[in-house]
Every structure is written in C-alpha cells, then in structure tokens.
Amino acid sequence: DSGVTQTPKHLITATGQRVTLRCSPRSGDLSVYWYQQSLDQGLQFLIQYYNGEERAKGNILERFSAQQFPDLHSELNLSSLELGDSALYFCASSTGPEETQYFGPGTRLLVL
Amino acid sequence: SQKIEQNSEALNIQEGKTATLTCNYTNYSPAYLQWYRQDPGRGPVFLLLIRENEKEKRKERLKVTFDTTLKQSLFHITASQPADSATYLCALEHDYKLSFGAGTTVTVRA
Image (tube, rainbow over all chains, first blue to last red; front, side):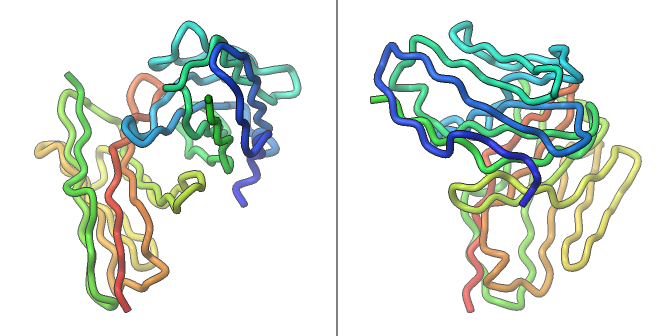
C-alpha cells in the first residue's frame, strides 16, 4: 500500500459526460501528479501540482482540468468524454518535485 | 523528437537466471532515471533511482547502470524468481516531469 488513495476505483459513463476523479496524497506529500495509462499510449504524464500550485503540464487535453486543494487532495475533471478517454488514471504523490513518486491504485474509466 | 525505448515488450527467463532490461533514450538530458515495477491493473511501484553522476546502483537482487554517453540504462534482476514476473518501466526526469517507457514484461518460469 503506497499510502495514496484514489476514488472511485471504477467508473463507467457515456460519451459527452463529465466525471471527477479524486486523489488523496500520502501524509506530508506536497506534490501530486496525474497520469493516464491506455493500452496503446502507455503511461502519460498529464499534470503536476505542488502545494496547491500548478507546477508542470504534459499533454493534457483542454477538456481535462485539475486542481489541488488547501488540504492537498487533488481532483481531475474530465469533460465531454470520448471513447478514447477510456483508460486507467493514476495519481502519484511525492514530498516535492524531483522526489520519488508513489502511485495510487488508479481509477479505471470506461466510456461507452 | 524525444524518445524512450525499452528493449523488448516481453522477456521470458528461467528461474534463477539473470534478467537484463534495456532503456535507451534520445533527446533527453535527465538528471536522474528511475525504474518502476507494475503488476496488471495496479499502480507502478518505485524500485530504484540513479543519478547522472552515478554509474551503478544496487538494491538486494536488483542492479541498475546509467551511461549518459550511450544514453542507456540497464536493469538487472539476479537470481530471478517467479514473483519477479511483472512489467518494468524506466522513467526519465525532465522539466519537473517523468516520462515513461512502454515497459518490458518479464515472465520468470519455475
């Protein structure tokens, strides 16, 4: 158990819908990262927050947004969902940027 | 363009042998490189980090080398066990981001 929690574990929704994925980092970790893992793309970095501020951005679609709250938990919002958004979404946390990342169990999203 | 390549998608070895995985990269200058293990349907688990000024790092039966001239890292699992069967990912740090290779799936036969 990494200490990172993600909810929900599974999510099934329809195209065009909007979902919110939630992540609670390990106690004391200030950095939160979001990744998308699909069969054809591998593990792709989406976005990083450090102590509430956006720190780095990857190839995150404009339909996706995220934030980190004062209590350091983070949410990833996915809107106007498409079939291709079906994937595993992982959250990771670390004590700070450039430190070892600890991954959560992931949220499996299926868009029908 | 930037690229991270792991030598093969799958590696099948006999228990007790050494598994050697390769990670090659182009157009990166990482300050460090990491190796993760991922089991099906689960999040990656950190194994080892090696910095650009380190040639080799060991942890129990695992060994990692890092050659910044060749732009290559080798990951060795010695005295392999069936429990080592998993997908192994290399990851490079750049601009506060981690970019991952596609992974190599290792299967250790008893």
